Length: 351
Image (tube, rainbow, N blue to C red):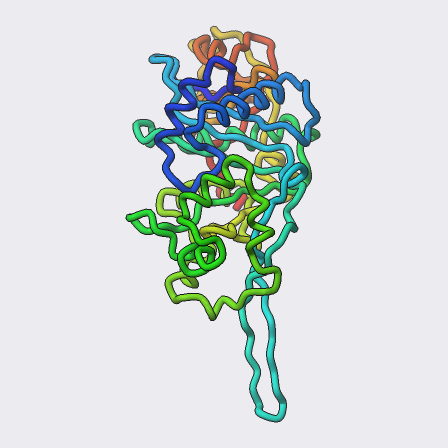
């Protein structure tokens, strides 16, 4: 069985092994033992609430309880850009016109921006290829929304997610080759590695501050602005289901889209509900059709330090949910405890 849970100090070695599977383009998951160790320490302190909310980095792992293997990882950063610069390009428009010549043109531009500084960020989503089946990806991605719904006071009103930008099968980034290489004079993977370890001052030192005309870029670079990596497309769709949308901000290296949302408008904030766990015997003796979900339900406990979430077929009825004993154990809960529930997929009448 699979459970998504708060990361623990003992997960370091398994986390490192998982990071070796990620590949380029995800700066927050690099196979660097020191970087992973430092981040894990911050994550453990985050769940323990021993550091301020804006400095927290909540990391979650998906564990296969049958084998003890880690199947995936994801995270929420309390706030970005408060201790180091956080850069994006903002897609804008400049208009040039001449009445005398009867010429009117609109030109797309890229502005180097720090507009998203201070936002809460969803990041580091990675599911091991062996587990990319069924609803596993949805469970891993959507656990973060249920966590935010349970503890909204820990996060800022604006939520963002930087999506991995488009790369060719060879690993070449058309956008970087058409723009970034002219200023940085190094390979994409090298730049990616520098930003992963927090060395970002070179961005401000080397990138132009004036608007860049998109039309000056090679055609293949223009075409991938706001386009996600092939393997990231499903993750983008999941985030959009939960209320996130593209507002014209892209990554400065690979032009991947930055999705954003207001926390108060997330589906999990609107539709998730609290329920008490009924006696375990209710599952066997009282599984009336109305108590069994037509589709899986996301169910989490309500404990910050030991947050855990699963998929269940049990549906809350009149504020009570009859969870099987095995699922209660996965959640570290028992009869009478309160859990938070949400349908895995948006209901049609909710859009």
